[in-house]
Amino acid sequence: MRNILFVYVLFSLWLYALPQAILEEVRKSGIAQKDVSIYIKEVGHGGKVIASLNVDKARTPASVVKVLTTYAALLKLGFDYRWPTKFYTTGRLRQGVLKGDLLIKGFGDPTLNDRDLNDIVAKIRAKGIRRITGNIVIDRSYFNVGTKNNSGFDKNIYSAYNAMPDAMMFNERISTVCVTPNKKSVYKKNQDGSYKIVNRLKYVNKPCKGRYSWPGVAISHSQSIPTVTLKGSISKRCGRRNICNVLTKPYKSFYYALKEKLRVKGIKVSGTLSIKKIPRNAKSLFTYYSDSLEKIVSKTAKKSNNLYARHLLLLLGAKVYGAPATLQKGRNAIVKILRSKGALGYGTLMVDNGCGLSRIAKITAKNLAEMYDNAYDRYGSRWMKTLSIAGIDGTIKRRFRHTVVKNHAWMKTGTVRNVKNIGGYVKNKAGKLYTVVILVNSTRARWHGAKLQNEIMKWLVKTKIQPLKRVSSQANGSKNNVKNVFSQLGTEPMAYKDPQRDTLYYVQVGSFRQMPKKQYFKKIEALRLRYSVRHVNNYKVLVGAYADKNDAIAALKKIRRNVNIGAFIVKM
Image 1: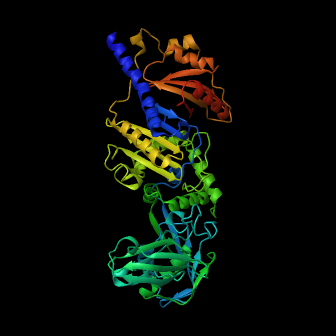
Image 2 (image 1 turned 30 degrees about the vertical axis):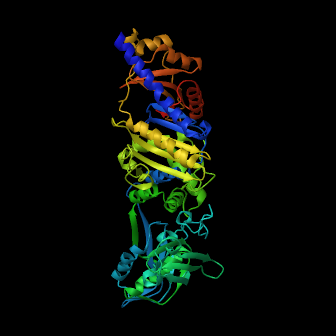
Image 3 (image 1 turned 60 degrees about the vertical axis):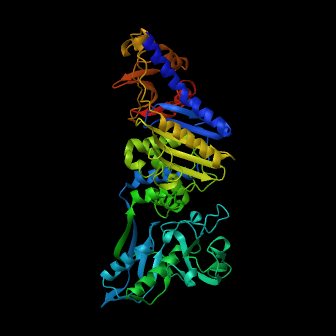
């Protein structure tokens, strides 16, 4: 009896110690509880909830919303999907002369860059083309996104993270000016006539530090093409400095870089740039493909690449609702894909642009955790590896490099002003995997929020407790089994099925190794809900069945308020 009591006491301490420890960390952080959402549970569908705080509160997600975009892309297109860029010709090719246009249709490959040009030009040469008498025609109609260069989210309008999408993307819309003071050299990394440089630098014989270590930069759009003016004094002892800014149109940059690469490889283009749709009579020349979607999704999440996320959202909009892609089509597509795969619960959700650079995007910790659980159940470690690995890569490489969390967490972070979020998976020392979401929307979020998240994750990693087994009901003198529970507490409910529908909805209240006690069922009876217990490998308590999903949702809300916040809907 003493041993049984000791096990029960240990179980009780475990059950309540983690929430208390987390609440203590919240208290020490100085952040108001109302500004923090925490949801920690055993990984996967139906995993036991360990800690829950404000899980249904709508929060600004920042970049954690990218996982909805990347996961929806994988669900719709698969890990091996590759973005196409298609090349066409018009006219006739005779003796190496293409008497007509070279046409390119972009489908939004965000990874296309100057390193791809060698392969592209090699493919053009392989077709026997040595001269093009017509124009280079670019079709960017697959995305309907306007012509804005930057999002205007903040004052850093020329920064890479503010770059806007385009169906004919090139070098992530970044123009690079290379300054090499020790050679008094200033040049464009790529041949690009869509902007110009004015060099007013003064080279001085000073140490390469402080105000002499970097050129002053001024950008002007007052003329027909953007102008980058370099000014100030810079040390002649400095090595190369790359000045990277969002300056111009990516399709123009692509045109100039391609034309120059063709010239270098002996292919002369007589015409100029033309922006229009590919005509029906155009003949397919070849298709150039990106890396796999798995690699693109990984870079999107690990590096928190806003442009990639925007492009994924637009691509899904076109795939689900047809081209041209629009922002609204993309938003709707992500929600539709995730809901159709059971990857989202019910509650506030607004993905906005899919990258998190937004103040109107909203999500709840519960919604985000349900997506993470669905992704793990479906793809396991392959999905996890697309996220940043603590202390190893991505946005949490440095954050956890010298901590116990290193190599024990796979996460996506999100940071904008007054927002510090993190979500993903944490594995403890005993190898137990948890889904973890911690959202902090507070004026103290940047530093205090990060420290709170770090301490919770460290605590979780250090735990060595294996998944708990519930205390046997027989140890307390009870001999209840499935049969006598039904005889005492009511028979299994009838399933009234609509003959036009095949699906029934249940609310799974809980899953147990041993039969729950009578008191547990009395909580459900008090809500006037019909329930049943199914026993296969464990005991599942189900409320229902419901032919109408809305009825199941209404029951779910009651269950979560009064019995178990971790309850969820299942289809049978």
